[in-house]
Amino acid sequence: MAYISAAEYKAAMDVSDSGKDTQIGVMIPLVQSAIEQHCSRKFEDGATSRTEYFDGDGIIDTIWPTYYPIVSVTSLHDDTDRGYGSGYLVDTDDYLFYDSRVELDGIVFNKGKKNIKLVYVAGYVCSGDGENRPGWLKLAMYKAVGWNMQRIEKQAMRSQSIADKNLSTEFIVELPKEVRQILAPVRRWPLGV
Image 1: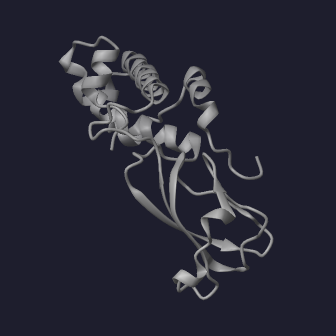
Image 2 (image 1 turned 180 degrees about the vertical axis):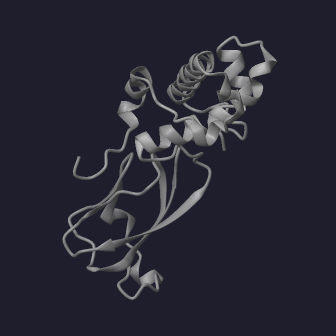
């Protein structure tokens, strides 16, 4: 689901010109993809249950799911045979979950390939139309779409041929510093950085 709609963007940025609707409609998913890539995550609605599998190494006690914030953990299994039966269910007293991780309490995960199965709910709880999406996410989208729209206009002034180009393949979306600052608290940094 798109983080904002073209109508939301136009209302927030006080745009009344319908001549830009197509560009706005194309720009929104491009900016959303750039934000997701920059943050190394997606900002999904929290109503969907997710299942992920992790490798254990006999040393780690923490897993970092793809989606967060974690709203709830439905089940956590540690089964080297990958049957994930009830006998391999980790007791809820043996782990804690935080915004972006699940951590065992005093024990470690067994060594194995995809032996850890996590079923959880994560993301930002939104209504069907996204009206409850976090304000900072909408603001980042508004600012990034607007900034990139201005870049297109500047390029068009320099070269009339931009109208003939396919925006999604010829134009590289960038996130201005202001948007990167908004996103800094929710960015998942790649390991080793």
